Length: 187
Image 1 (cartoon, rainbow, N blue to C red):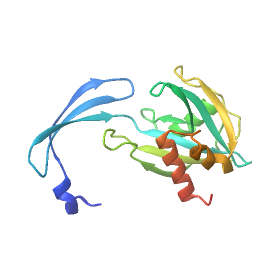
Image 2: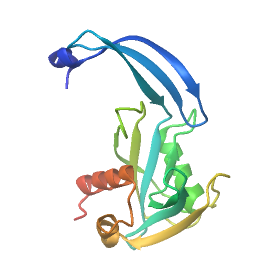
Image 3: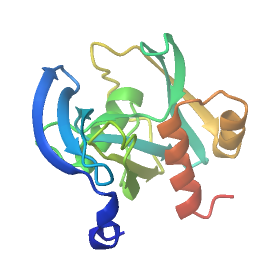
């Protein structure tokens, strides 16, 4: 969508200030003017590095997943391997490293399926989704010190059932799988 055809919807940024800085994100307060009323409103914006995930398929058409405790929900979460794009790295490089660090699998190549804004109402970042085919368990498992991971390998044909049955509940992982099914010949 081009901006000029939607000028009546754009809010003018009148000012921005950093409110708090954390390890994984910072909180900014933007003061914006409503295009309809002209009134000023404050919005909290979460600035975060970009994120990556990898849909890793073995030669047997199995998907490599990670099971880990998530502090936000205080529950286990079955997800695709991935993480933050490290400072100074491309999304490709970070995706390749995350796959190896979290699962011990190596990818001969990565294909970018696409990217999305994970939560544009709050976050400024992008979420990149990669496909790695013919991955092999030849790398070095090396999770971050704040990660405890279990590698789970399932047949690709069971993946949709894992979403339908609530075994995979992370919204951005489900969106990543949507890209996978949209841009591949998988049914």
